[in-house]
Length: 150
Image (tube, rainbow, N blue to C red; front, side):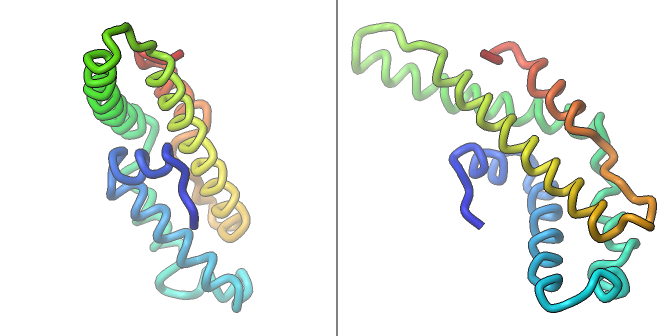
C-alpha cells in the first residue's frame, strides 16, 4: 500500500506498535478476505474477535492523545531543525506554513486510517460488538490541541 509523506511520518514516528499492529492486522485481513467469506475471516484464529480485541486493547482516546503528543514533538523537532537550516541558507525567515501543512497532512492521514479501520471492523466484525476505543473526533481533537496547528 502506497503511503504519503504524512503516512510515512505516522507509520515511523507515531507509535510503531499502533500503526504496525493495526495496519498489519487489517492488511492481512484484506489479503485473506479476497479469497474468503466474512464468516471464514472471523473464524480464523489469526483474525477472530479475540485477535481483534488483542490488537485494539491498548488504544483508547487517552492513548491516542498521548501518541499524537509524541508525534507532535517529533514533527516539530524535525521541521524546526529543517527551518533553522533553511533560514541560515536563505538569510530570511521561514514560514511556519510548512509545519502547519505537515501537521494537517498527518491529521488527515490518521483520520483516514481511523475511518478505514472502523469500516473494516464494522464490515467484518459487526455482530461481535467490538469497536475502536477512540473515535475520529477524538483523533481530530488530539491533533488540533497542538500549539502549531495552522
